[in-house]
Structure formats: C-alpha cells, structure tokens
Length: 495
Ligand code: NAD
Image 1 (cartoon, rainbow, N blue to C red):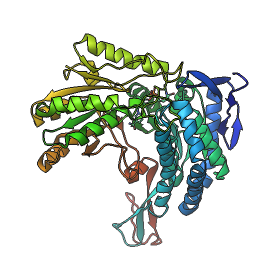
Image 2: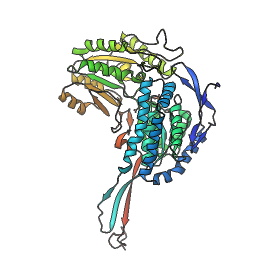
Image 3: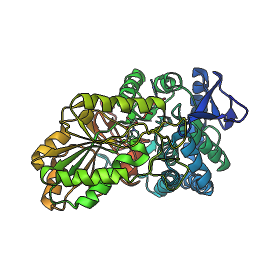
Image 4: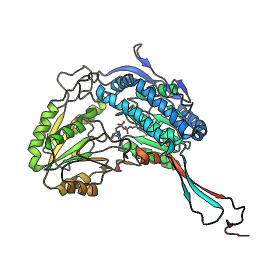
C-alpha cells in the first residue's frame, strides 16, 4: 500500500476493524492503479461476524416492523445525501460510467424505501381448526442469520438488494462483497452505522471467496445463503450449503436472447439491443448476449447496429459524456478477447472490429471497444456461453418457431427480449419461451416489484418484490388449544 491509498476497515458487530490476514489493494480499472486498500478477513473473523449476527438477531427480529422500517428509511435518506460521492466510488472501483453509477446508487437507496413499505404487509394466515376451542395460525417469522455473497458488477445496488429485504424480515446479515469491488459495501457500512443500525445486525466482511465465502456456506450458524454470481461458484456454494441443509437463493449468469421479428420497430430494436448489450460495458446478467433477427430485416438491422455501436463513446468513466467505460479487470478483458478469437477461428465475421483501442482513453486501463459479429451459428460457443463484454453476435432466423427453439436451447434461462407489435406472437412467446423474465419492446433494468429469477442454471429462488422477500422469511404453524382440554382430543391415547 502506498501513502496515497485510502485504507478502509471492515464492519463486524458495529465496529470498524482490520483484517487478520492483511490487506488487499483495490485497483481502478480506468488506469490499472491501486487507490485504496481493504482488510483481508480470516476464517475466524468471518465466524465472529456470524456470531455477532446471531447475537443481534433476536432483539432485531422482535422490534416492530415499523421500527425496522424507520431505520431503513434513515439508510435510504443517508444514501441519497451521499449520492454523488457513492457513485464516484462505484466508478473508481468498478469502471461503469458516472451516469450509470448515479442510477445504481439511486437504486441502492430505493431498495430500502421499497422494502420498508412491507412493514405492514408481512402477514400470516388463520386456519379453521377441526376442533372447538382451538386456534391455528401460520406466522411468517425471520429466517435468522443471512449469509450474502455478491459479484463485482453492481457493487452498491446488490448490497441493498440483499440487506434491505433481510432487515424488514427481521433477519441479520453477514455480507461478503467481491474481492475486486469491496469499497461500495464498506461505504454503505458507514451509512448503516450513521443510520444507527444496531451492532451486529449488518456485518460487511471483505476477503476471498475461498475463505470468507466458504465459511459463510459451511457454518451451521447461517440460516440462508443468498448469492449473486457465476454458475460454477453457485454450484459450489449449493454443494457446500448442503452439508447443513442451509437453503440457498442463487442469482446466476445469463445468455439473454434478443429476438427481433419482421414487424418490429427496427430503429427502436437497434437502439434497445445495443443499449442492452453495452450498458456497464456488457457486464450485466440481463444483457443482450445473442441477437436473433428475422432474415427479412437482418441486413438493415446489422447496418443500424454497427452505426449505433460506432457512435458510442468509450472513455473515462468519470465523464458524463462517456457511454462505455473499461472492463472491470484485466482477467475479465482477456476472457472476452478469448471468446472473440474463438468465434473468429470458428468462422464468425467481424461486422465491426473492436478490441483494445490503439490510443487508450487513459493509459493502463482495461479498455475494449465494441465488436459486432455475424456469420455465427446457434451451436458456436459465442452463442451458448456468457460473454460479459461489449461483443455482440447477430444471427438471422427464418421463422418465429426457429427463434424460440434457439432461445430455449440454452442452459441459461434468466432474461429474454422480444421486439414485435404482433400480440399473438407476444402471447406465444410468453407461453413458449422458458425464461424467468420476458421483456417485450423494452429492455431492463428489472423493476423492484418484479421477481428477478432465472430458470435452469441461471439460478434458484429469486430476488426482488414480495416473492423475493419470501426467501428471507419462514413459516411457523402455531396450534393453540384454549378449550381447557375439553374438546381437543389427546391423540392417540385419548384417556
Ligand atoms: P463469481 O461467481 O466469480 O463471484 C461471485 C462471488 O462469489 C464473489 O464475491 C466471490 O468472492 C464469491 N465466491 C467465489 N468462490 C466462492 C466460494 N467457493 N464460496 C463462496 N463464495 C465464493 O462471479 P463474478 O465474476 O463476481 O460475477 C459475474 C457473474 O455474476 C456473471 O455470471 C453474472 O451473470 C452474474 N450475475 C448474476 C446476476 C443475477 O441477478 N442473476 C446479477 C449480477 C451478476
């Protein structure tokens, strides 16, 4: 660490502490230079955080939901007060353009306001008993201690997406940010402290997936694992969690098809398909990953798409005029380069040649300009594996049925896009497209009140809305005999 770097501490049991395993540098992807350092937690410190969350849970869960909502509204207000500063931190550690980062931090505040609205809405059920003098009810209760693990692509909003439902449910939480982007979570920890969240209710532990993450998934003191990230890590987490039968909620990767039918508004489809591909430098699980265009409008679409792609400004993400910032890391950049090289050697053609710019916007950054590929077939790896970068394969199809078949022949099943004005086709797609989210004539982001859920290997469980909140609660059935023993029989020895 150099003297110019800001040294952060992590947040356990209401205290800001150093890591037992040293520190880790945080790199700015726009110039490749370290600018901050964060603690590297040990396995023992992770266990301490779990113990703190356990200790705090009873009192937090017994507060009235309205009281918990009050704390959450203070968090939302504090995020808004620090909006611009938090957005700049997102840009510096992750690289998305400042306009997008402002949107992300706005979303981070909204999660708290939105889930605070559930204070008067978490309800139970009263059931008819078979006996006079007995009351039976089902009550929703906190799940307990939540272990949350998040990726690098939305380092601020994904903290709120996990913490806000946990808080309103009466749970406490230990959250592990990604190694590359820990600062937004640690900045939010300061906000949790400022909003007087009681000690131990939210804990932010920074460190390796193989250390902090594995402990969260294998300790019996954790009652729910909620993870957003890649499919291989999701599978490993599920296998580890099975040791204690800890429930998991997994939001994993995607390979979103973007289907453009012959009657679609082509200009709208071009702008939408490109925006959906290039936002956050293509690093979003719901990004347009494979564009399928009806053959009759294919040439026009590709021409428009290439023109639009060329018009985008790749540059310093701190500037409001920038459309595409750097990739998050060199490793991620090289992965994308590998995918493109493999596609080209497999026969794909470059309708727009992208890659590392000859004159980088800032020296040392992880820059990639857009690449558009044609001449692809449905079975090529570029059409089946997640790309996660500013690279678009565009493939023609002849019939709607063929487009649906290609769409569904994927191990992923998160988001799908359809552009058409034919209502019949829309309804057919709703019936036949086997994906958790279908967007018609619009692109993301997903709504707070929706249910963000992937089919097949894109996940298990889901986030957002009332259905997402269900993961953070469990149901308890209560039988109360108030007949004095007169009418409720003692089965099976009724004497
Ligand atoms: P990743 O799987 O590499 O890492 C995710 C998190 O898991 C990190 O915090 C990492 O440290 C942790 N981890 C790693 N090994 C672990 C282990 N053995 N036990 C426990 N935790 C461990 O994913 P990434 O590269 O950070 O993120 C990109 C992926 O996330 C993409 O596939 C993207 O599609 C997906 N994603 C999905 C959604 C969604 O809502 N479905 C949203 C954003 C990103």
